[in-house]
Length: 421
Image 1 (cartoon, rainbow, N blue to C red):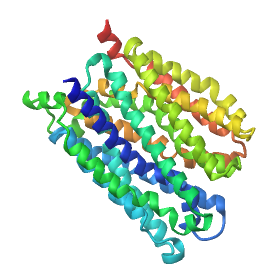
Image 2 (image 1 turned 60 degrees about the vertical axis):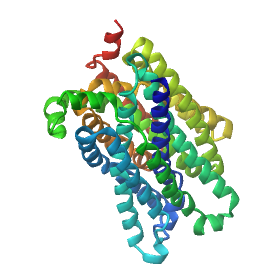
Image 3 (image 1 turned 90 degrees about the vertical axis):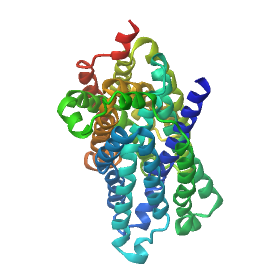
Image 4 (image 1 turned 45 degrees about the horizontal axis):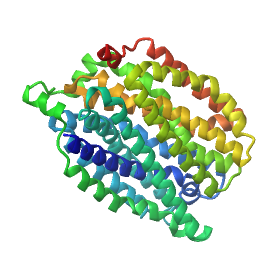
């Protein structure tokens, strides 16, 4: 049983990390893409448009959640996860083959939008599926810890994307990287996808799903049942996840652009800082998830939301000093807060919803929150910076999200803590 559980954990982490690698590469190459896929002109406007295309992938995620949630609740978690990894790997590879604006004009950004939509559909089902699949294999008293491995693999995927992009950029001149080197990280998504497919194809189905199937308690209409009977839990999940998704994409996607474009640091320094941030986030995730197994999800996450509210402005003030040490300390502390709040989330989301509609309920609530506040975070933060003229509008946005989540927790009942009693 222990050997099987380790195999499931490794398979889920590798598959999930490989998918997040595909999705992360776009974030790391935002400035490069903004120069290649739009005509010469207003650099800020093109950067905003490129961040808008990043957000488009998130708009498609609720639909992906519906599609893969339905597949996962009707036919099994494993089948949904196997299909999703192909839908991520192939569009990622195709981005690496796209002609630029200089070759085909406006068709270049339009085709990029289409491929981002396909990526969004895939990730809309994949991440919740991996959380569901992994935690349904976990013993009740270790759900927080084991669930945090999905977030750890997310950080590893982002880290792998940063390291590969940094390595390729370091091996080539700026002209070579702009001409063809930027394509390589995207093209690597294809073989990476096949590795993930092989891993997931050889996993066993979730025991909770198999039990529900044998008991004939699976929902025949999981989307309708989730909306009709679990809407209040979905609303809670959206409010709680808000302070995961907005700060996470601020950290993982926008901070790279902000460090390079606003603070004037080099691309190599921005990617190096991002790699350090992902390691800090990974450690904080596992720490807080393990703590939530002992004291409950609610206490840990409310503490994390309070930290966001109190510390965001001081950390941005430190970051705006622009010297590398100050930027590293500020971003590292922010990464710790993101990881600390996020660690218990997979277990919490699984515990909110019943098995029969769990995949669908999680996927809908998670992806609605991610589409509205996560994928738009880089674009909204850049817009706030341009409109207000002050970087302090960005931590103000973080604080608003933290307040919404704190209010939501007033209506949340900690099922794990009740079980411990």
